[in-house]
Length: 387
Image 1: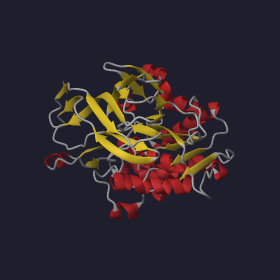
Image 2 (image 1 turned 135 degrees about the horizontal axis):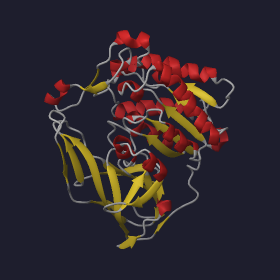
Image 3 (image 1 turned 90 degrees about the vertical axis):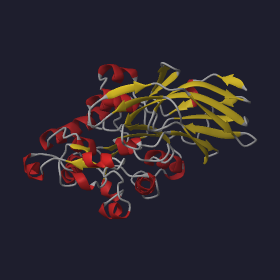
Image 4 (image 1 turned 90 degrees about the horizontal axis):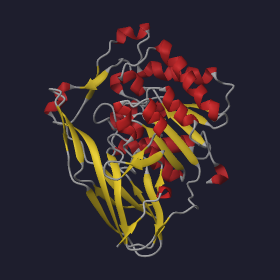
């Protein structure tokens, strides 16, 4: 097999690629953001290539991709490894579970931390004969550097991608893909593939905090549709009070409008999350869950303080709806209630496994409902003949 140059046009859904410690590092935020606000949590999340994939046309029947991953491991808590989903002509063909890589171990009970280095991973992929489009969807839950790509035939980039329509989405860990089984099962990717649109996923675990720097990044990223799913991280970080939250949302939207005055924006409130519906943050992992090996989140705020401005999801939804109403002169701004995507009845039928994030079945439900309300005929943004 021949070594293939890792050309930038193969990489889709990333803001930038750069030289890393092992190979080509993928970034979902541009360098100026990373330099201006290098928050450790945000930097770790933007380095995980959620929604990023390699795309090419080839007659190759065998591919070999060498990569090196890094991940955070919470000792005593069972979290599955990331994987690479191989899609051939639009259909999931095989899923390659990652091995090796570096892991940063954290003992949540005593605070001890250590870095354990590991080996690189090689994905050996056998493909069907003939000319086909191949997509390698990279892990949504582990940082990954691309080291080497080999194939037994040439790989070609293509310009006739049906997903030319550009959808930029920003949200929290649920948008990032937490608890989904694979990178094509996170709800934004499932929507993008079903609607044949090109996704730029700015879902960042624990980091959707209405940061001005993220608003500027969105402002400067060309898009045909922008969706913003905000609120849950503000609550579980206990980051703001109502007085600060409402003007922060207005400012976030104002900044985006500086560069994208006519781009449709859908502001989405949080899905149902029982622990934070009427109880403010901060949220944390319930210490009792360490004994089970399955993390469970809990809320520790005082509901009595809501009257003084502490935020809950119920308050957040009302506030976001009021922001859109106050900006009624912006005909391209829309509101979508997150309870339409996953509500209390859904939580009873498909409970959040850790009290905070949906599993793959929950992601599929959210994707289906979002697609109906946004991209399907008579939805908020029906593309009509463009489909």
